[in-house]
Image (cartoon, rainbow, N blue to C red; front, side, top):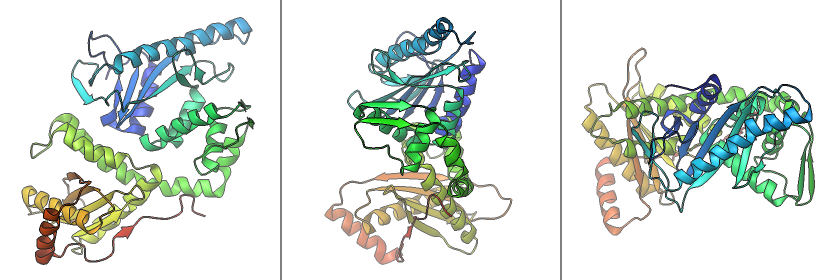
Length: 396
């Protein structure tokens, strides 16, 4: 990966770690013309984040130097973002920096564009204003704000939800006085159960809220508990690496695999914590011949875990995983999306492989019911209660 400067690399490394490799692109090109589209592009479902990164040294805090810095570091980013948005809305696919084709872009009727300017070099000495710069709202972050936001909202689901709710909050409020930084706005959002105040009049967000929020014992306990979510991140990244390298088996395409990966990555950090714990617990018990487990996420998605002996063929394992996903859909009619994850029974210090299956079946027909009844008469999958995921996000 080639970057024009260290600033772009800094931002890409953070977004890459947060959104995971399959959805982040550095220096993508335009679909028609080959010119660079923007500095970083993230596409996740209907969400498209356009990042423009500018670094400019602030020479002094005089009004004229601050005005010049804002033109170089913020207004020029907004101009680049607006241009990229025009191209994206008429394009069908991402074009990687090397000219190869990436993932498909959302349709014009579904796309949700998030405009993000990362303006470096002021070191907190110049005003940073997130606002409409002429052709749509632009979220503007300096170094500290960007690190805080991406460090806390480090999944696509958490990040895009924050941006959307922040925009709605600012649009619906008569006036918002942000005495501190973006971090204090984030703390207000998190402390209010991931919502902003609903008042429509004048609202003041004080300075120091973020520092106080991070000192709470509940917050410290949450960050410690979130460590287990790295298990879920690892599953996504493992398969994504093979998808990008073209080494998937059974003829899987990037698009079909991306559906399962996108669903897994759509889980927020809290749910990833619980899913990671559930998968790790299942693997540990697979050594005791616990073959499969069904868990239901708060998102409404059913996850089917399957572990088979090492001598099981991949074809047989994939067939059983598909059958179990079908049975899961039939047993729990309110849940229409199922993701199956299959691997080997756990053996310490042994390598592993993964199979993913994505099932989205909104309708359940009479034929489906007959097939379900036949399956269950022979196999009796998932006769017990499913594992429900639900604990405190901020444990004491």
